[in-house]
Length: 256
Image (cartoon, rainbow, N blue to C red; front, side, top):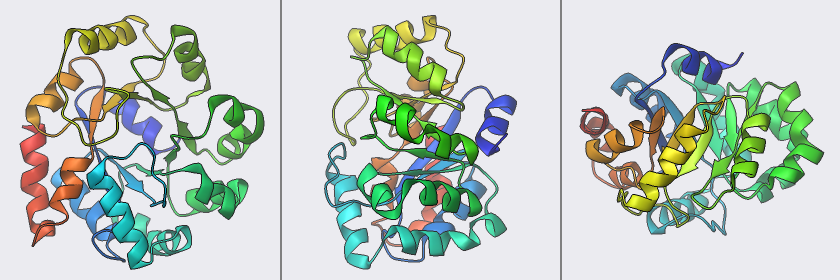
């Protein structure tokens, strides 16, 4: 049982995850930011590894990825920084990014190295479910590394049931099919989508992402899922002066 499973077994509601891009605003800040977020009250974290063609990312996260790449961030650099991770951070950590850098690194090698460094799961938006199941699932399972699948309002019940079957920690519910960085507007159609997922009584917890930016949207998401993810709003904070000193107030403003 990895740290994600332990977390979901001990805390069922109002879980807060924060996303940020490794290498932004500078190299060698990944673990410093993670440590500050844990101390401020984040329940688990998603560390993005940048890629040159981020199809699902909005302008804020795209910019952070571009800057991180310019700063010299690579998977090898990220793994180097994560050597200090478990000396300073105890909450679950996921890596989030696109499949191409993982393939270039070697999928089996990536899974082994990530777990050696204390990573608990991976979110790869462009890894197809059927390809994961047919070719790569054993690498994740053998290393006790969770692969997190994404669900959108357009995902069929049949596919969601299959995702639930293949999952072993949580399912990432996108609040829309758009890019990151938008605002969560709880329209009737989105509310119906959340209700539909909740009524399915899935075996895995659900976490809502895209558009969560403050206490109001966090509360709205938590009414239908086990927690929510804040990404773009936090990445914007990292562009400010003294961003490390502002992290506690930011987390408090979301959790309320």
